[in-house]
Length: 85
Image (cartoon, rainbow, N blue to C red; front, side, top):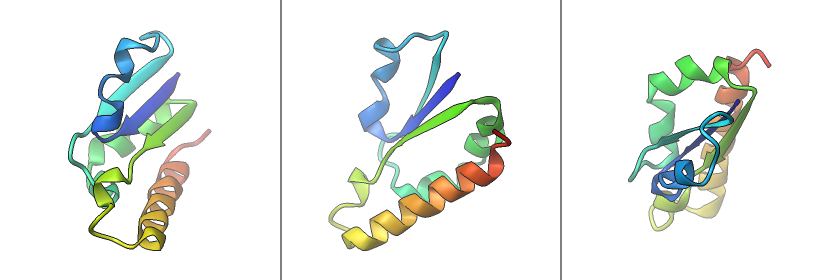
């Protein structure tokens, strides 16, 4: 099963994806670093074979592009380290 994680850009994806194959966790207004503080994400990550991250748009205007990329990499590294698959 695939976890789709992101800000408001992913909130309606569950209407278009099979509930048997995908689970959508949407956090409107979240910036990339906010996801790192959401412990439930890292509790459920090990139960998914794939994780799709959609985020960074709420950081535009507050951070330089290289900082946003760095934060996304940090989030992906954390997801990868918490997932046994």
